[in-house]
Image 1 (cartoon, rainbow, N blue to C red):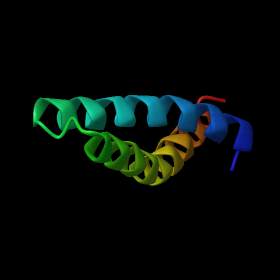
Image 2: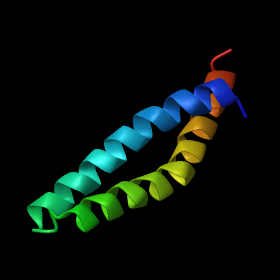
Image 3: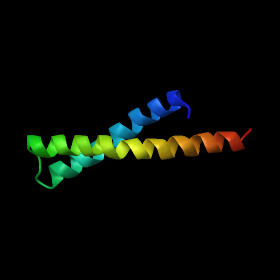
Amino acid sequence: MNWRLASVMFTLVFVVVTGILVTAALVTSYGGTTGVVLAIVAGFVVSLPVTYFVTARLIEFSATQK
């Protein structure tokens, strides 16, 4: 796996997923400290496999373009 690409993708995926989950927590009245922290932790956990999948697909796509 290309670790540079994976680290960049993790940064992007983490920000997007965490933003969605924190927004969902705030909209559903879980806006307290515990709700937001749980949304951030869940965003981190969900971002790991999503990053792996997206990075693998990008590497596969770039290999077919050569």
